[in-house]
Amino acid sequence: MADRLCLQGILYVLHNDIAWQLLPLELGFGSGQTCWRRLERWQQAGVFDQLHRILLAELNAAGELDWSRACVDGSHIRAKKGEPTPVRRRSTGGSQAANTI
Image (cartoon, rainbow, N blue to C red; front, side):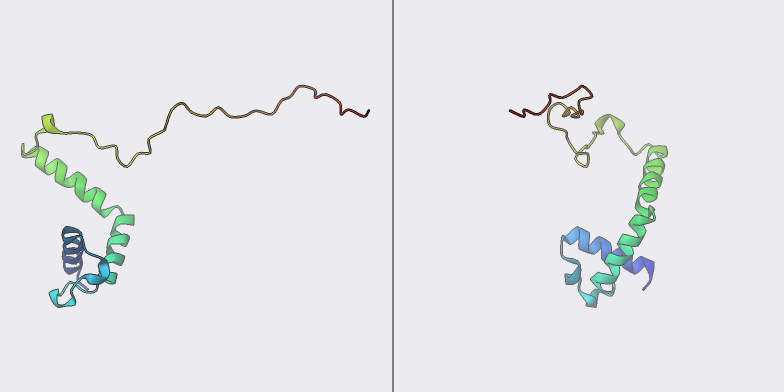
């Protein structure tokens, strides 16, 4: 399966928000399973992170990005609730002897 067709299949699934197994074979993108495996392999290899950096650099160089309207999305970072829980330490002091009466 050609990389370009797989990428088109991946984009089709993501754009249409459908399950991988529902990717229509008649579109010629290959099976949803094949596209999913290729996406997983490319993701692990850092292909999409690199592509994102390249696109941002090229758009920035062309003056096509308005950084004054940028926002930070922290939705992928776990939010801590309240103060951190202190670590319980074992006492190093002597303990009372057991009552033998």
